[in-house]
Length: 268
Image (cartoon, rainbow, N blue to C red):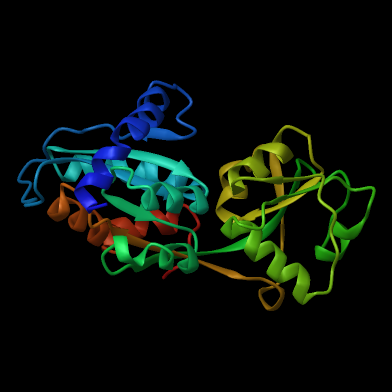
């Protein structure tokens, strides 16, 4: 099927997914940025467009902030974010779901749809931490403690980038963990710990930081950790190619990078 036909065939499905989510006040899956007034003396030349950005779940909070900042400095552009596990986003792209930009939490996921994207650019990096309940009631000090069979540990599923990174670091240390559940994205892992349904879980540092009033973060030494990379790329089926490219480029700009750094993401 041609890109145009594939895009059209997926329109109904994607609309069914995005529209109800956009109406949710929680914004857990889809969040629309807030347009700001035109800054005095604005020289933005980015074309006006409504962009749909498929982004890894761990970018939920920072992209809401980035979206508001981008809309303010680029009048006429509206951003709609759809957040999910990178494997889910890749599946959407493969099925031809209409979107303009893809940002995953690992390069392997992006590589799976390289025929559908422009050249990716890594916009940030991240590392894992052990998330525990507030006050670390079970006294989890390091990765070895996760092997305790009396500890309720939750991990991201193996096909999720956070799950792959978790398996990588646990295997490297020869630590066997039997999780009580394996979640479809890293934010679901964080939620389990926040709600007390798990005693500990492996999440990105930025996820733990976003919930620091509800969870504690136990650092993992760099020599035992894994580095997550976040590539961003335009989608070839986008009907707003120029505007999509402008947003991807902005993510690597000083303004975009400052927002990412302030949220705890590391330099590309």
